[in-house]
Length: 301
Image 1 (cartoon, rainbow, N blue to C red):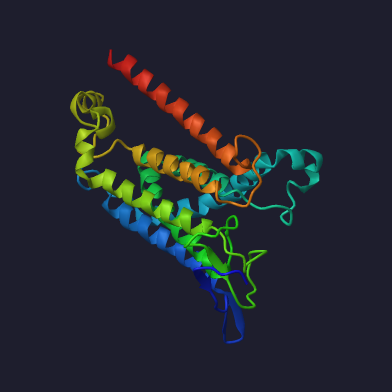
Image 2 (cartoon, rainbow, N blue to C red; image 1 turned 120 degrees about the vertical axis):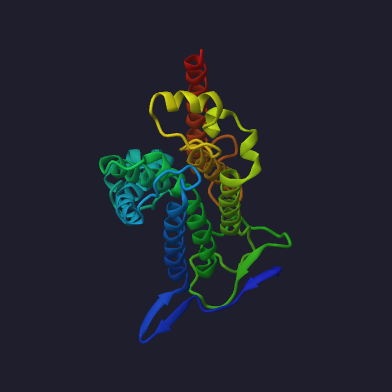
């Protein structure tokens, strides 16, 4: 095996009472549970400083279940779009679960849409719940990506740097070439998303929010207009929905940046299919932001 600074050699399968389970599966389940627990904790605290009612934690269970069909459909849809040339000639394989997989970007967006739709049907504050989900989802993705190391999955291109990662032993490993030192792309993305969760937490409570415009912090003239219309105002904290927007942008940019270390073949501009789809999402978000600013300024006048 070529030399690597970081070489992992362990049994990725644990046997308990006759049952064989991969450590990676245990890690992913733990990441999902941690994300749900964090969402429940944030929901209990969200809006307290503004005197708003707490978000009901039992509603979180309904929203989590509602996110599942969006995760599956959105993940598959984005995967098909990313590899449209193939599925255009093999349309019967679009619904074949044995062919291809799910796009993480599509899964996140689809899950958010279906959960938000359920929240609107239940009469829940959608934007407040999206802010709650932003930090929790980034934590869940970060821990989930780290769990891929337990199965040798998510390795990037071959790499000879000091932090190259390789896997020894019989495995079985998910990587087709586990013994070849490669970029630990799964670790890159894990650290990126965990850092994003920290950034969102800092934005929510940190002193930097005092320097943001009143329309974002819900203070000043913006807050006065909302009060005059009888609409809820949360003074001193970010406008509801901003944390979600920033968190989503952080996640999507991470898909583009880390994507340069993946094994996927580039299609255009040195970017692979998933990166190009992510770039399209960023472009749409930028257009939305510009439109929001223009409409806000016209309304202020």
